[in-house]
Length: 224
Image 1: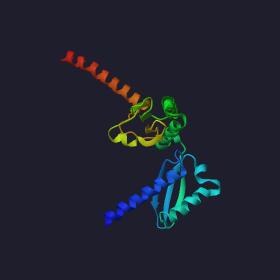
Image 2 (image 1 turned 45 degrees about the vertical axis):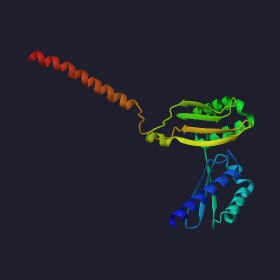
Image 3 (image 1 turned 180 degrees about the vertical axis):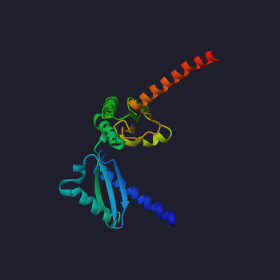
Image 4 (image 1 turned 60 degrees about the horizontal axis):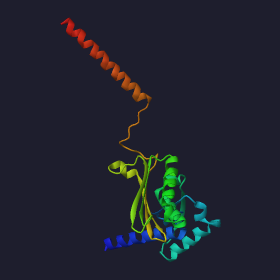
């Protein structure tokens, strides 16, 4: 019984997330997190457009709160807004932007949209980024296109810090899948080595000591 309750609990939580994303619209919401407190349920919505999500005088927040109470039977839900200050490093926001761009401009301009987005991410300071578009883009047959720039770890512990997301664009020829991977400059890489002035000075000192030792050894042999 406990396993069934856990599965049902997770399904309800997923349904709340999907409903909020669908209700607020594509390209406005990155993540929806649910935290449970003694007072009630706290639903944190991460967005780069807080004004559009909140609405005039908080009208949209009030509507969502009432729907969560009646439809999903939450006792005391409270919606909080977490503003994304650097949307260029948020993979879900970027993936939704590309999907919206393909829906508006059409799949024929997929290269322009992909290259512009990639340039925007790298110019913002990202260490690396990858965009994969799959679907009926240039012709009748489905095909995958990859656009990448910079450093992007794909295996090991360092790959866990890469922000990944998926989105879907509904175009006239068919559905186009969008996959985004972004390595933020704030990400901590365990295998990254930074060479600063202090390390360079230590290396120079070590090399000088080695040269002195080499010069002393021939003198000792001559004495013997």
